[in-house]
Image (cartoon, rainbow, N blue to C red; front, side):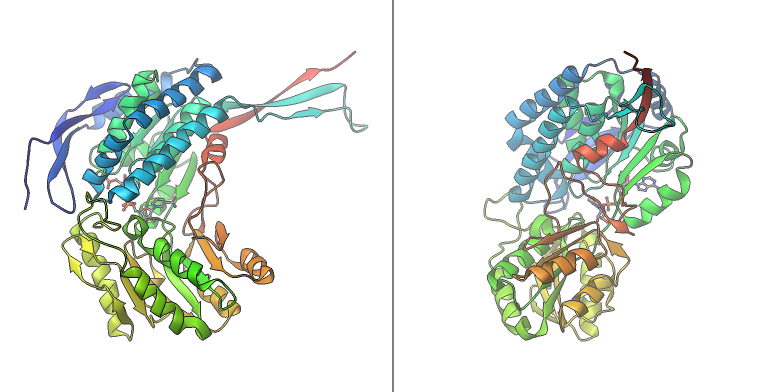
Length: 479
Ligand code: NAP
């Protein structure tokens, strides 16, 4: 039932100007179905203006000025942190525990990017080091890309966006952002805060409109030097096929394993399995999607995980005690229900949860999942904790590596040799020992391989490298 109570009206941003030329898009909260905002969309003319203004803009901001804009934005948003967190809850249904945490992470991104804007990472090469050399020195410096296209998903409406905007501002590249049509409001508010902090209008446009009119032509446009995309494997591969001659960064889906060995700390394993599977209602690219437990401890582990899962209050995302809200919409919840009951028809057993209420899927522990069930072969983007029993570490590594994904992995063990073997043998971009697969700080390199990405990392520092070109210059170095 839709309860429209005077929703806030938003416009897109074209080079710093609020603009809307097409029918507004209504954004609804997936728990209450309440309309929480509407956004006036744009079309091809506005895309063209954003492309022209962005690609013609020569950023003359000094490093100090770029750092100041990022720091000021961190302060502006820091002061409005609760309002932003509630805004993310409004449009995504993520509970306040999650959206407050996301705000903290996003503010870290701004602060790390502000610090990084002040740093040089250039090198100096003396040329008189070989008989072929001369008395010269070669220096390297970074130049910003001319224009970046950034396309982001629904599941972290602030953090995935700021991970693209902050490094671009730190390096001095203009960006055209196309946020998810499911959760665009936070991105539009963030853009306003960036302009308020002093970002020149042409450094950022935020556009919403049909894929054929905005996202696809943006990806193909020759004025764009880099497409940085976070989202599903399907759309990521389409982008790789259509982008043409330009840089492409793809941060795609995951299907992360948590390996639990008998020689590990069982209490820690239970905690990590529950947090890994249920945080953000399981809608994280690095959520635990497969729990691979050594057979000898499987009964005890399962028993304790069920008890732990029952401590996750689910439902209304605005209640302080809620730890798990709905997924993004009812079709997404139905898709989870479908893969769950398909696994059940093939022998899996639901130990707790398993019920759907509209867009809300209960936190669910399911045991004895067949290794080839769709639920564990593909990415199930929601709060499902499937347990697969393995005979030993070797078997766990085989199962972990058996899907097309390769984002992150976690292992719980107290044996160093098992930890190092897992780090070396797991085919993924990140491995965490005695932590959830997704553990990171916003500055460290992050990204997947195989279908999860092309191995080009994000994280503030890596993103700044990708958003710039290295230029070398040499000078005579005579006495
Ligand atoms: P999605 O369906 O792939 O959408 C992502 C973005 O792509 C949206 O802005 C979407 O726009 C846009 N898009 C759709 N069709 C397009 C096209 N033909 N050309 C260009 N852009 C297009 O992903 P999602 O469902 O929002 O997000 C969930 C996925 O993101 C999961 O698979 C998750 O694992 C992944 N993810 C990965 C990471 C990582 O770092 N690896 C982080 C977070 C999420 P519309 O909204 O207008 O359709």
